[in-house]
Image (tube, rainbow, N blue to C red; front, side):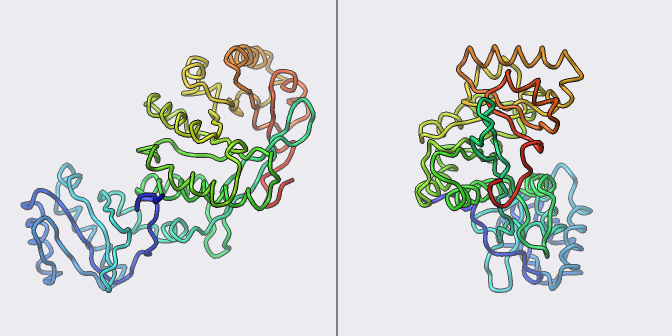
Length: 345
């Protein structure tokens, strides 16, 4: 099973090559070509594509600036672009990007390199069974694997969203977590792995590489829990239900994150029917000092129990928090039990 090229790009941004602009409106490309004629006489138009050579990074930046100055903001949205190196190899095989996405990539080539060359690894944070106080599983979190290319995980994912590389990063992060779990964890231990719903535009197709990794690394699907993140930004519940159904058909479980805030209300919990519901840290933090939080947690406990959904409280840092939360949830997670580490804590 092959995944789409959107998740596979391997050719790095080249400091010498050609900027390719594509648009169904040839008059826009001709306008751009005229604007570039004096500074880039080699720029040539081939139907719906315009090829503009650049000799170094500075010139490429100048090209992008001139493009933004030449074309009106509404029109530039109609143009898509990509880069090829001096050998004619396209930076992202089979794909082009909006001008804002391509500009983001050009402005942050080190971030592109981290994503394309997979300069990251999976750390593991324990998930504890509240009944036994023993590890039930681990959540896999992305961390740098190169001191030369450090990154903040939140900033890397934000960059991937702004640059059109979200599907690639999300897919490769899942595969990395599956591979790491096969080496680090014993069968039967749950593996909580994050995913961004907006990166999976067609679940039946986009998840093929994930399911192939499950098979290749001989991981039991029943040990996997795929956890949706950034739920407060999701507006298409039907799409998320479709993703959940594809995961469940493959024999894996699903979890809904950020419960208790934003998008994840009790009504949505009942609608999506996840196997696990992860309570947001804002509900857990200092719960021993705020009785109203404990009452809210009881509401979620009752709703989850009625739907056979397991509750997981994350972000626990204090023993006082755990004492309040322990009888009301099934599982817990937080620095009180262990920080993310390269090996299971």
